[in-house]
Length: 143
Image (cartoon, helix red, strand yellow):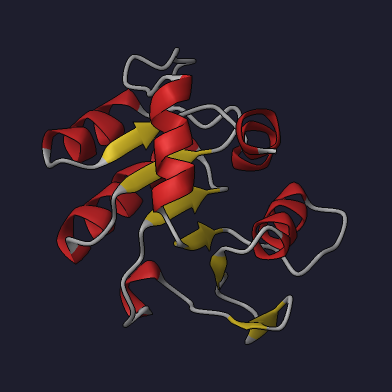
């Protein structure tokens, strides 16, 4: 995949609304390794009061939370999906978000840009944040 710039994205005032309204956040690619950014972000989301649901295929628990192998496996409603995976995987994640029908925000972390997938999600009513760290934005806009 060629290097992209985000064409589909939200502004700060929209991000503030998402962070206020969303309560349950699934972290796709959450890692059990303390040194990984996905672990640090998942931990931060828990610490600031979100219901953080880790998605990782090789663990049963991360940060004391039950781990799901796939976003499809979560039975409770999910407000936001934060992605720590390669850009080409965002297509499949966007499809699952669309199929679920409950995801309000699809958020891809720094360097993760897939305009085709995010436009498809946006066209179904899902809000998009690309190429930004949810923890950094929360600290900047909400604390």
